[in-house]
Image (cartoon, rainbow, N blue to C red; front, top):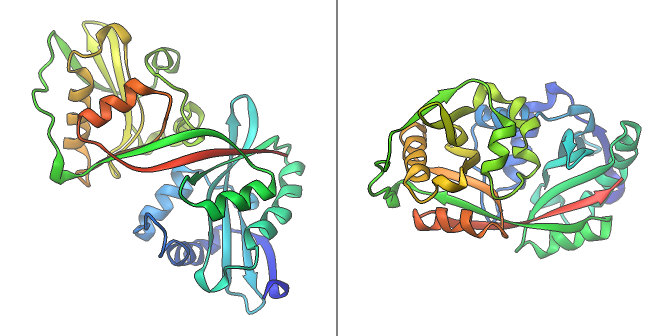
Length: 291
């Protein structure tokens, strides 16, 4: 079968086929994706800012799509980076090193664009994929935990502040200030550059003590997905973070909250979410390959 495969970049006209293939490729995944076509577009076209020219499809010679790599491009940790926002192979097409073949096709395209590194995330339990990525040239760089709060176990307790604070929606993020409130640097997808490109789908909350911002959260109400959150160190353990989570829950469409890629070294952040009843849904490695 490997000899009957050819590669080519995607075009916007391919979106429906990309969506159908995505659902099939992840139908037996440890964490199945149940996305509507609209949600798929929001996740990959709007949030990920998918670069069609650097997103690759592996096709059978009958024209059917066998696998894919969805790519976004932005700066990450000071380098122009190609982010793998999704790699998938349909069940019937597995076992023929399609991921390796797609990267062999993709890397020269990345070099032409001046890309310096590739980054991706993979489940820590997906040993087969980890070995495949390591064989391609990726190395493990960070360990992430991903959390979810389902509606059946929501308990925010007493969300009243011990002070005169106000939660306020703002239009423009104050990145210089927010960075001082966070315990870890965000992963690629939730960097300030990526969020700035998706502000139409993000809500920015600030907690204010008179005229001073003492905490913030950025989230997507349509998914209940938190992109970034942080509280000023001197203002922690006063109910501010809990009230932010309550506000996000109440204004989220799906009545569940998720936050992905919390750095495993951020003990305070992990403890905060776990104390609120968030469940550690999956763990992931960040992996990086120089180009």
